[in-house]
Image 1 (cartoon, rainbow, N blue to C red):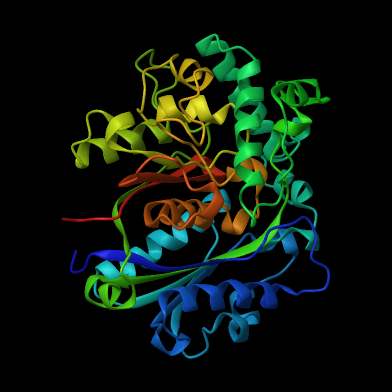
Image 2: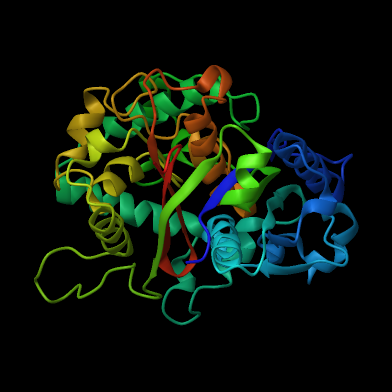
Length: 389
C-alpha cells in the first residue's frame, strides 16, 4: 500500500419512497455537490469517479454513461459497480484501491437508487434458480425470513427482540432528517403489525427507498489539506460464498462459518482487537430486518453465540448504549439499495467526526465498523478510525 486513505467529504440527499419531480441525475448532482462542498474542493480536483447502483431495478443500462453530466465524470477515469446489496460498499473499496495503489489522489464515490422507477421485488425474483428456488421466492424477503427464523431457533431468541430492535431503529431514524421512515414505533406496534412472512411483521421489513450518497476519498497528504477531521479507512475485507446461504462447510459438523464469521475474524485478527465491544464503539450495520442485529453481532465475532439478543434486551445497542448499532436508523428505515452500503460507511464517518447532528451517539467514538451485505451472500466489512497515530 503506497498511501493511507481518508474520507474527506460526505453528502447525501433526503430519502423517500417517491420523488417524481426529480430525475436520477438531479438527485445524484445534489449528493455530489454536498460532498464536494464538505471536502472544500471542486469537481476539477477529482481524479476518478466511481458510481454504482442496481440499474436492473430501474430498467436502465450503462447508467454511468447516461448520468455523466450530473456526476461530473466526463473526461475522468472511473468504474461502474454492480454487486447487489453490497454495491455501495464495493464502491468505497474500489476507491480505496485506486488511492492506496497510487493510481488516483482523489476519488468521488456515488451510490444511488431511484426505486420509484421500477418494481424491485419482481426484478430480484428473476435471479433465483428457476427449477429449484424461484417457485417459492418472494424476492429478497425470502432470504431475510429464512435467516431470521434460523437465528430464532439456534439462539432460542424470543420474537420480542425483533420489536425491541425495530423500536430502537425508529427512534434513531426520527432524529435523522435524511432517513426515509421516520415514524416512532413501540415494541407493541411492531409485534402487533400484520405478519408478512414468518417471523417478519410488516414493520420489521425494510422499505424501498430512493436517494443518493456521495463521498470524497483522498490520499493522506491531500486529505490533511482538505479537512481537519479526516476519517481513515483503517482496514476492510470482502468475503463471498455464492450459493448455499453464505455457509462454508455447512454439513461438516464443525463450527459455524459464514461470510460474516470470516470477515469478522479477519478484521479483528489483523487489528489485534481482542475485546471488540470495548475497543470498537459503534457499528453501522447493513441491517435489512431486526433479527440481523443479534445474528450479525455473533457471526462477526463481536460476542459469543446465543448471547447477542440478551445484550440487545439490556439496551447495549441503543443510541445511548455502550455499543450503538445503526444510530442513523439503518437499512430498516432507509433502503435505496445502491446507496445503502455507501450510507453505512458515510454515517459511521459522521459519527467519528461528531457531525451526525441529532442522531450523534452519546459516547465518544474512536473506532467504528461499517458493513455491506447482499447478493451472492456477499459481505464487506470496514474498520474506520479518526486517528492513525
